[in-house]
Image (cartoon, rainbow, N blue to C red; front, side):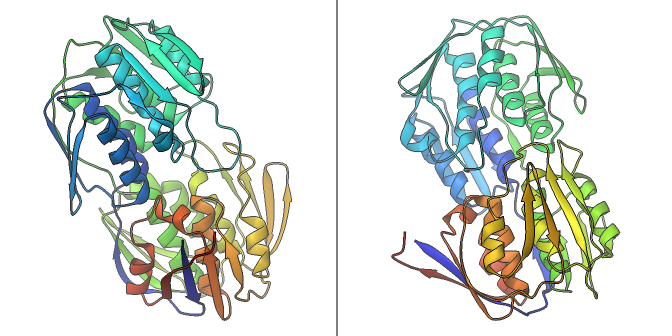
Amino acid sequence: MDKFIVEGGVRLKGTVAISGAKNASLALMPACLLAPGTFTLNNTPNNRDLWTMSRLLGSMGVQTDLQGDVLTLDASHLTSHEAPYDYVKQMRASIYVLGPLIARYGEARVSLPGGCNFGPRPVDLHLKGLEKLGAQIEVEGGYIIAKCPRLQGAHFHFDVSSVGASVNILMAAVLAKGHTTLTNVALEPEVMSVVHMLSLMGARIEGTGTTTLEIDGVDELHAVEFATIPDRIEAATFLIGAAMTKGDVTLTNVEPEHLTAVIQKMEKAGCELEVGTSTIRVVMDDNPEPVDITARTYPGYPTDSQAQWAAFMLTSKGASTIKDTIYPTRFGYVPELQRLGADIETGDGYCIVKGGAHLSGATVMSSDLRASASLVMAALVAEGRTEILRVYHLDRGYEALEKKLGSLGAVIERETTEDF
């Protein structure tokens, strides 16, 4: 099992290219189940979650191949309509295969999902939406079993804004017979990316960019070539890391519009930002002002970047409050940051970060993907050496993070250990 060894105190400086969005890729890949032929996804990231999704699709007969950042997929000859537990337990996004399978093949058997451990995230909206479209669903032995000769268009309202459910029901609806109206659809860029790709495939969707999508089902779709959007969470992580170390870093291959909430908070903290069409430069010469954040659905501050912001505020001149309205229990990183000397208090759905505490290197353990990133950020400014265990969590969503940070001057190494 790998760990990171980080020597703190180095100012990050230089240019780094941001990879394609993990969360977008994991939604785009199952869309290949909706049509025969070879799909080409450009700007695809190379991380553990992508490997897991590739293996899952491969177990069903999908031919996948990743060369550089170009991923090809061909689901012309499926051999199975089952997503087994061995794959699904590793990643919640595996449930994305449910909608496409039942839409094109009329049946699916998908294990209940796993993923990061920070509180319950039920799949009831996925199941309710599919049932509204006519699917017969049973949950038996830890598996979702869905059947329907052909889904029928309907109106479905998402009780809460859910990225996963929005993507799944959308992919099911494009092959349903008749008209479907989806309301309170999530606005995250990853959802809109799926809308754009499905439209290129021949789906008839109106309302792109709004919370209401009108879909007229079609009889068939076709394979396409499509570019994955840049990863806004990786970009936010590097922006925060650069600012924490009082660095000067330019990000390339970014979509600044997707980072508006993060950019606004960083400017409020005192960062100097130069925003281009597909680049962002961040320069920081002083400790940041304390800035509160509340993680919300898009276009609000992203929940996947709140742990990194907490690490940033450790270097601030005062106290700041971090709240999360999406996953109120997502503060498992706090005890590990405290091992480095952080002064943080936790409450119900929030934490209070008191900046200015002296951070010293220690051995810490990753608990989930974004928690891992917050530990790396804190280690960059902690005095001395920090060992971060179980970075397989981090590998789920970041492509060669230690190499990218190293190219900016960070002293960080990956080491294989027998620890569990």
